[in-house]
Image (cartoon, rainbow, N blue to C red; front, side, top):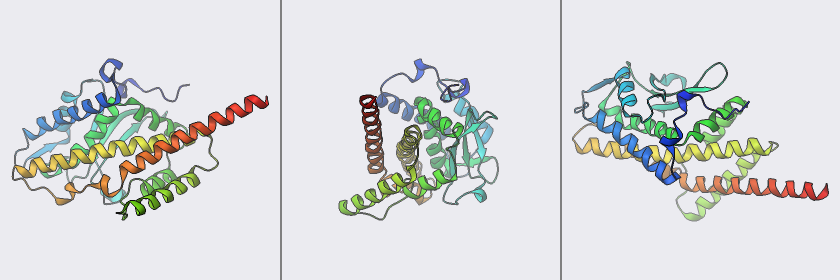
Length: 274
């Protein structure tokens, strides 16, 4: 059984998502812009409210593939770290197939206010990235089906990759990256090549999407505040810069390349000995 195979509800047509990575990245931003234009046209003041059901209708109208299933749900802030205002997660069925994508936002009722739009658009950017890069969802599903999507992995990712760093100078950043590499090697120790690559690629995909999502969050906040709307200051934080996300992405790319190289050399050696 191919554990990478996606259900039709999260598998856009190849015609829709064809193109280079750069082209697909551009389309993902354009999709987010389409949704923002729809929502901002309705939410014009600080007291405007959009219900979850209306948000789902707007999302469906914006999506190029109407069969791609996205829901908007309430995020219980008590069940997680309170630094999060929203999440974007894959919803699985009993067979651990991802069957839909859920945008979860912190809300008192099943609705959001204009002030929540920057975070909501952040989470929708993840949806857009996953839509135009189906391998993101496929990799996540593969981890789930192999039992690799667990607390150990999530805590490790949050502690060393999806976090901010105090390092400012190039020298200190190099030291931080050296530590992260060592900790990653320790985390992966004893695993087979397939599991190592799945973890490394998943972290790379996640960070790449976070760079996009925080960019959208800051742009949305800037546009709304320029209209005189009340937007919280944290929406303007450059989290990817503070977390040296680009440097971590490059580190992961190098580790993936080295991992593949080592496996090929081991395979070549085994063939020669045979």
